[in-house]
Image (cartoon, rainbow over all chains, first blue to last red; front, top):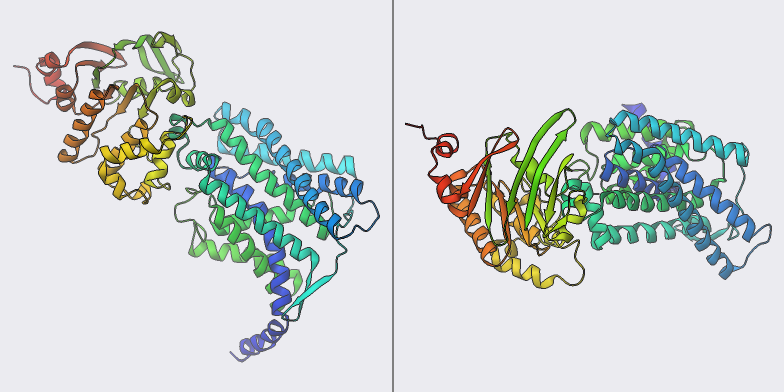
Length: 320
Length: 235
């Protein structure tokens, strides 16, 4: 008992001092997980399959925006207005690259299987194959080393929140993430296009009776998820650099976040992503940083034991 | 209006329809009767593009629609109320109705009001999720959703399934009114007596073929129908 008490006294001391910095850092990563998680959850919603090559869509967005930034910025330090434009350019460049790769992936790796009514296992193998193909191709073409991305803003502290220094980068990520997640929620929740996506997720055959083109809707889902994932690749690249295997760990965590939030549920993916980022960040206060991933995946198992459908997943995968 | 010639439908190695032929004329209510597995639902699904026939021909208003895809049928003027109602469970009643007008251009708010006129209960439930409605309400919603496309031909698959007799009476009364307002109806039913009292003509299916057909009035008194579907013995 005493030792447990002592543990908490020591560690809550750290927590009190570091609460705000840990929260800011956690949310910043959490937005990236949330943006990537959206792609997993949307594809699962309409196809009931986990697109394990989504990590490479993230990576594609990272590389595309990396080349774009290098071409636009080079080694110069752009001013404020130019930086805003460059961030928008990076998000669009990364997002469009991600959307394009997702579209190609759907056409090449999944649609032929759908036509032949392949079993679920075939999709999994196809996804893993596509993933290895894509990241090894990137490694071969762009080099197997880490490269840092040209920065639109000089990365400095712009203000302090309760004593926590908030980096420009964290603000960019939070802002872009918030805008994109809310926009997507609106699009899926209250447009005709969004209604067709939800209809296919809930009952594809009946949706087709209403005049919804299922193939087209599936492409739309890949494009929307791919755009979010590619843009997230850009934001991640700004902070951590670009690498041909950069997609692996963040995407695995985003997948975890999607399951945590309730796979198939859009808001669940967003909440799961943010929660995962924050938990990961706070776990540093309690345990050695080396145990970070142990904590994250331990949390996944714990949540699933008590709530197998995830936080918002009341009816499994029925509300993309 | 609708003409089916020698249609064959296969599911893999199993042949579900072995050359089915029938027709539906404008303004009629036609019913397809038959035991479970006779091919009634398959026929209806074929008429919505959910199962393309491997042989045979389907024409609608003189146009060959044999190879038309499912998502284009609502534009042709054919709406399908599927077996088991198939309401979108996580959409509100109003969103379900809006889905019915998916293939249409322009405003459909008048049509939504019209559906609320036909089915007042749906107006009360408009903000509720489809999955939370009772079976009878779901059936009304499924019919309303199909009518949102302004069909000239309405296909109904087992509209009475699992519903209380009083609700079934209401549903069948509404089907009659739908025909009276100018929509042709093809209805598949297990409840043969009720369907034949409503219909003009009927086709009886057995093992994937049309066994016989007649005016509904005659079928209602046909000993073969009475024996098999109305539970009477032939004396």
